[in-house]
Length: 352
Image 1: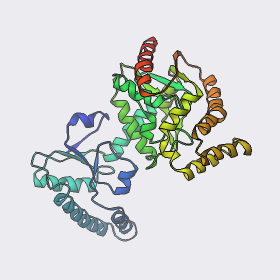
Image 2 (image 1 turned 90 degrees about the horizontal axis):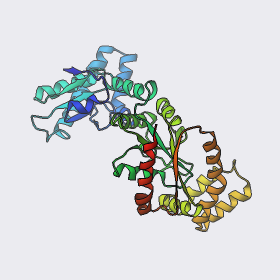
Image 3 (image 1 turned 180 degrees about the vertical axis):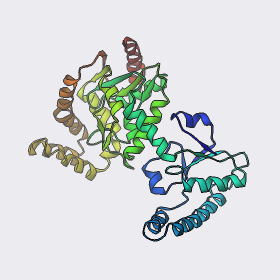
């Protein structure tokens, strides 16, 4: 039996025990329904072999070879990954477009006695709804931007707001990047489609009647672009600005970027990318600070001469409602929780 996906929220409401994605590992790695598990019925190599036979040789032969491979791989999954599932297990199975791969696997599971169902239209049907949510339709909840210079603990503030009961979306967390030239983290970023899947889930899980806090960003986080509708909502959103001293911000950055400070060569490589923006003398000064372990000097120099001037220009261009600003002497978690969060929540009540 196949079941049609009308809204992204349907998946959770259906109550399946597992979402089984039978596409190849590379297809799954590029993007998948959040929470799905990968049980490929054809490996990447096997899929290529069957495809070549289908195009260059004989379609019937391709189906025969493909069926044998699917059956063999299905048997492996049943004997291994699915060996502990009891008779009440109810999985939702899908492939690329709800075709032979998922149909064959679901049929085998059903013959065993499990209550397997197919996702009509497969991944393509799911992907259409993601695009519709992030590109075609306006974002329903009102956004409030947490704005401020580099190093003003905006991401940490978002998570503290969430702990206080507010709604937030951490775009940098979804994109696995801290949002600057120095923002790459170990493991790299998800694909653009995977970033969009994560963001779409975050959006549809929101209460549309309550505001949502989001960090002010450019339209790209690392190499990932913020989808059109969400970026439009951000561009029109009111803001609350966080301010702090250069010294306090540099101390916060040293805590936040500890991983980069422990890898001198990586730090130097990223500094070299600034050579087209600054004089040789200034870049040499920053390189010397990095090599000598004067990281506070480096952080302050980067903010004062690189990030702050760029932020000032961007801030002036943003014509939006200002809900207020807060000035913080320190940016430790205790101060943020006891001082910043109550003020931000109070300012958010000014939203018209």
